Amino acid sequence: MALVARSEPVLEQAVSDLAKAGISAAAFATDVRNTNAVVGLVEKVRENVGAISVIHWNAYAQGTGDLLKASLDDVRQPFDTAVTGLVSAVQAALPDLKEQRGAVLVTGGALAFYDAAVDAFAAKWKLASLAISKAAQHKLVGLLSQSLAPEGIYVGEVVVKGTVKGTAFDTGGGNLEADGIAEKFWELYSERTLVSVTYSG
Image (cartoon, rainbow, N blue to C red):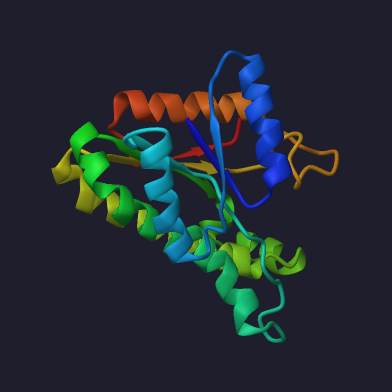
């Protein structure tokens, strides 16, 4: 198993926690907004861990909330994390995914939905850039599914509707358990039929 994040201390802790559970993992510190870095990451994983059979894209960047004042870089960074980075990873890993009849699993968010209440929430809490990136990612999942299904590659997304307990977004009101989301991903991966499901507990 390969774990990827920008923070080396976070990765080291995750590798240690998995080791205690009897799971071997290798850490790769990478900024997935950088497509060249993502391509290099795939090569390193292939060399050090082996062929890539599953990509789980859980990365996000919050960006800015005020689209009238934000720099273009602030708007673009969440998009590059959610969309451009994911596309580059799939392209780089495609030979392995084809050979393994693998899967691409994506963690989505309810900010992606076209709904006035969702938009009001995103605007109020300064999540505009994140909402834009998640909406684009939601569409990307469907397009990747159409493109990769003929190759025997499954693409699935769990849209998380709520706050996951213990995460950076949880200020004490988290209502979702990470284990429940993991179980939903396993269900999608095992059945390989649905492309997108919404999880709200």
